Image (cartoon, rainbow, N blue to C red):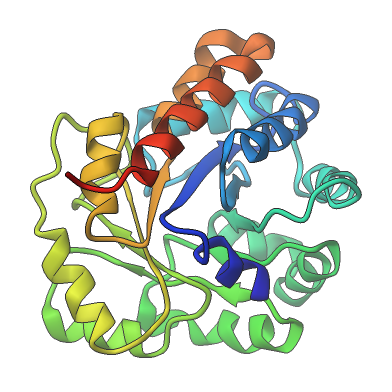
Length: 260
């Protein structure tokens, strides 16, 4: 968990998301190195799933492409082992409960922790059902990262009190995907969290432009971007690495600017 804390210690954190295996695991590995060099502070690695309920069409299609290409959880673990020989950037898995269950929850968490994964996000597990994962994650030192949506204030407070690693603040209701504008009162959400915990708040869902990222960075500790990066991977395929690196560099520079 120390690596996650470090991601937020040098100003506003930029957190890109990748679908592992889209277009290939070798390219995913290259992307991790390139994004770290471009300024990423923590990277979310999506383990593809056939029914990713929290995802919009961009990431759904990437999951299907990755699965068709033969991406498996074991192959992703092998890739992480190779990554950890060359980089210590914080890495967090984002996947679905069924992926973990079918692998064997304890076996999955133990293997992930041994390989140097720092945390796990399971968007289809509500706060009330996190217990079956939480104890095992604590046992192996993996942060089970909670998500909060623009819902009731009491629910946000309740989740924030027990948060580990960082809190993933969902900027808008619905699935992932770029949005023209973000209308949620993020400042109020983050304020509620800060009244309960010192754990960093990172905001995701719908952020795609430098302007949006800069606005979010004024109130949050970090900015998460997924669909815009996955779009570049789908558009450029095996040639996507320099395009993604350029995008990450631009976004990181934007959120690092001091507000006028």
